[in-house]
Image (cartoon, rainbow, N blue to C red; front, side, top):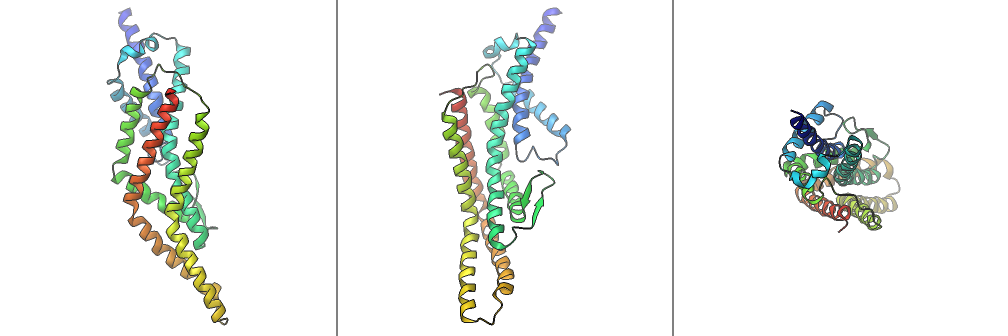
Length: 265
């Protein structure tokens, strides 16, 4: 009976570490980590995923963890939570692309002052940013990206075993710079059709102001910008399938780079 209890505690230690990484991912995930999802759902979903992944682990590779003390297990659990948090945060950063693009669009269209607080995420968002984010979330689910990323997290236990130590190198700085650079590049790509259209509208309004001084350009340009901006946003949303596929490829690319950096290879 004593052997059975020790074996149960050892298995529970490994399950706790798996749960720590999965919970870290779901805390930072832009879809499963939203405030409108009940915490009990997040906990139950993370725990069920942990059980499934736990059954696939090669427990021989974590033999030292199974017999470790409570204090050491807590330290490793914090490390695993940070790894999961990093994996989910990269996904969250690429979803922030749509908020940045929406901010650029609102500045040109004239909605920059009309910002709202999204009750689901708790962020202060632009109107267009919130609109683009909602459609991005729908496209994310439609192309089955959430399942692909969950498989990525499950596969991370093979690449980054529980018993592995974290590696900190100067390469992390270049990785972060490249990540932020690509994030803003995607935001500009999404917003550029609206920016170009607004530039054309401004040029036309400038020409009309010079040729017809009696016309109130300010009164005419505001509704015209809104109308043209909405039309261009519609065309952007029509391309969301290809946009989300490109962003998903970038997410997988940066996740694999993160794994290599953490592994130290």
